[in-house]
Length: 113
Image 1 (cartoon, rainbow, N blue to C red):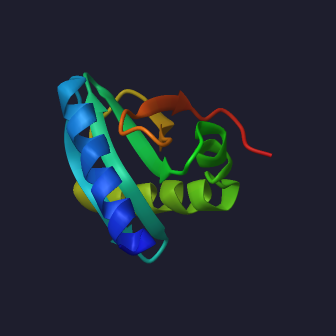
Image 2: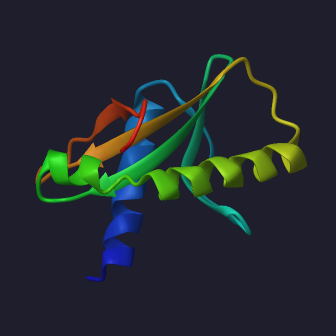
C-alpha cells in the first residue's frame, strides 16, 4: 500500500471519529491552487481545519505537521471560504494524529518551530 493510499484511509478514519465526536464535515481533501485541507469540519458556530498525520509514534506524527503545510492549508481555506460564503464565529487549526494504533488524538496547533 502506498503512503497516499494509507493517508486516504486514515483521513477517512479521522472523518468518522470527528462525526462520532459531534462534528459536521464540510469537506475532505479540499484542493485548490493554494494547497489542500485534509478535513474541514464544523461544531456549533466554529470551523476547524484538521491536518491528519499517521506515523509509528505519536511524537513523529506531530513532528510531521509542518509550518509550511499548515500555511498552505490556511491559504486553501481562505480561497474556499471566499467561494462558499461560510458563516462562522471562530476558526481553529487542529491536528489529528495516529500512532501504531487506530485511535486518533486531536491536538492543538498553537505554534510550530
